[in-house]
Image 1: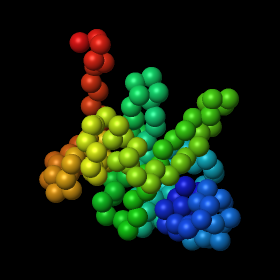
Image 2: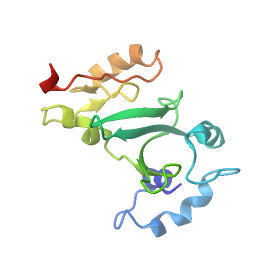
Image 3: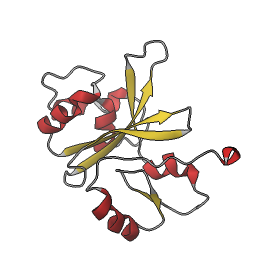
Length: 157
């Protein structure tokens, strides 16, 4: 819940403190929700909060990449699109923790040597150098379900 409230009500200082967001908790419709919210329950959360679309990813430490676990079918329509990154609990694999990914391009742009601002497709995590190129790409990409491109390791070629 806090990972959802953080982008909706950005705090100036101490962004990591729950007390900055607790006063806004009543703004979300959380009827029947348990936390941490299972991924299968994200569509229900979105129906209860129609102005929020969730984009959920997980780190694949083995491949040093990211995988899309959930992408809202309405990701380009609501007022707020929130990208969440799931961190697994090593002690209990059944539990996980969501963190808000404020700048998706900073998170996954390590694959590129480009130092300028980049734009990321939420559906395939492809990085583009210009926003108009991303918009053109998304018209075709969003027709398909979320996907990911995997490249071989350089030393294995």
